[in-house]
Length: 274
Image (cartoon, rainbow, N blue to C red; front, side, top):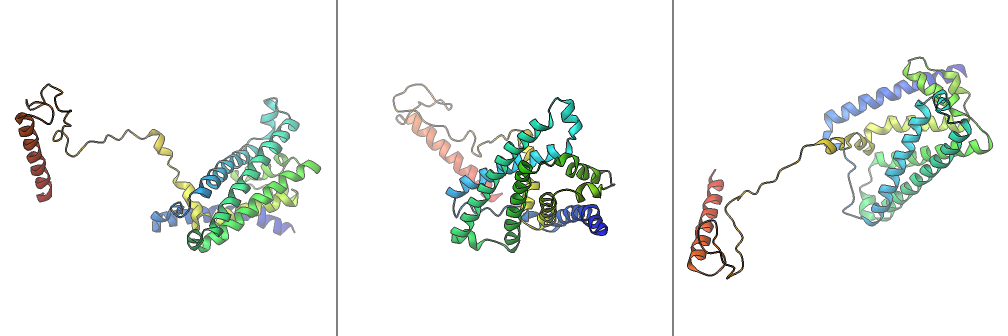
């Protein structure tokens, strides 16, 4: 049993990390244009508008909760006057609601994929592995959260200690080995999901347009700038840029329009020849 614990909680996490990094680099090198969700919005958008945002925003909240719970030690929250009972109540309520919302959003997306024939036809082999695994990970996480109601377990003194010890290259195998089965199952399913990540559509998460917020403005200019000028209504008075009367009437206005029409044709012919 000791060797199994070492293999699961001391060796497997590093193997999964190696597969995640090497697989992503390989995918980017040989399938750069495959970094996409293969969107099926053209086939159906009504259910997608509901399930897509619900799943993704809820999943961001779930990930944020995991980051806080796994990386922030309990001693720091106690120093900030956040007691264990208050932290547990917040994790149970906010985390539970976020998990349920993520499951609901994923259920809508799965229903859409099975109901719409065009979307179902675009389902790949990796999708058939990713979707059940996503459901299993979310349900295992919800189960682990629900068990703390009847069987209080401070995962920040067990699972979190094991997780942080991985970064120190000194895995605390016993900390994870004594965790309840629901937490162990959730961790194993999560590692399986990360191992599959580079070879599925989940890889699109690495292409989030974070640079969009700081990109420079794009200036658009007309190709025929200065060649076309809108004519005002007839009889409006005044003169145009060429000295002719503004409007549709009068010989000056007609000469100006003919001149500019000829200039535009010459401009297009020049571009065509070049």
